[in-house]
Length: 518
Image (tube, rainbow, N blue to C red):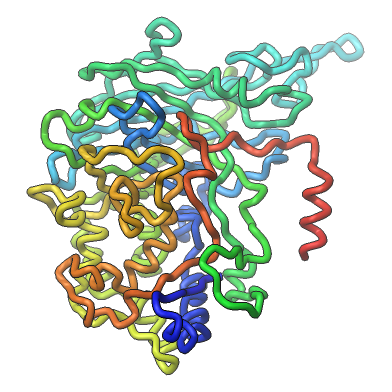
């Protein structure tokens, strides 16, 4: 489902067939657009702690420009109709967002989410006996408010902040100022359907909470809940060696080449924070780095389920990190298969062990092996200093700290003003919009197209990253996966991502169209 266009029509006509095939090969090695769905063998068995995407950008909601929004999505491939239990986060896990503000590779600020599940055990009297109901909802009323009595199960969470290394001290509780300074937050139930929740958007919006962060002036916001998965990917045909039918027409970078969007009916669970910039930079400069992780207890033991909870396990021992995500697509198309689990368990300070995957990348070489006879050539500058800049240090003059430790994370220069909604370039910096990827990441940034071009040497064509145009013979090609995306796909206010797809009622027209397309 990948295509490529070039700046010059004659060259495009000559190379189009080969480049189209070459770009298709990228899909064979990675899940397109979805930056971290089941990206490593071990995490594929632990969907509750599988991070799918991480965003970090200066808020572009009007009046919120002094804030940074961070979004960590987890639990991929959620079917909206996934009852009766739907999709809950793991109450034994630690979900964390880490921030570096000194150019180093050890977190300076960590935001830690911990989820709690409560079972009310609603019962009905049947034949003179009290019997527990089997559903998440009890049908007593429309679910419209947090802690609704019409729900049999409730999810809440706590949020803490840690200054310094994440395991060196206990988190300080972040306060829910919307509810008078308590330390717990309610999470909305998933979008079961319209009969259970008649106005899901209004209901979910009641779970956007104002927060006070210890050691930080200003009021932030938090939301944790189900959202529509914002990415497009043809998973089945992609991993069947790109078994996709394509129109035999002139290549169009705005065209939707996929015959089937596997995520069109999928949701994710999002952890969203909006924090004053000064709370993140702490006076140490304007450039921050960020990533998200999930960790589980080193060991678990099966026990009887607690009277007020749903999880039949109890945690023991220290925590082990099982998921990590900073810049998109790193574990998919950069890290070798044998090290994917290791990368998920690693920390930025130890990224030297993965250096060869960046300085001597296999993805461009694979494209040349497969399609070199048709004129496709990988960049020739080794070590790939342009990829070191893109993935490990930040780019000079954009988002590289004055002093930086080489390490993989998403980097954001908070001194660059946000680009307003409707004016953002989907290609971010490559499109002349310095407020976009790789300077942080916004929902409307087309990171697949951008990273394809970076991998094939577009920075060299711009004399960036310590290389020159002659190092990247295919660097000026406008690679695209054909799945167009831009800021108009999202909201212009927090929490930005769209509400989840509903489990009921079914959209008969959509189902008919979906069947007809097969």
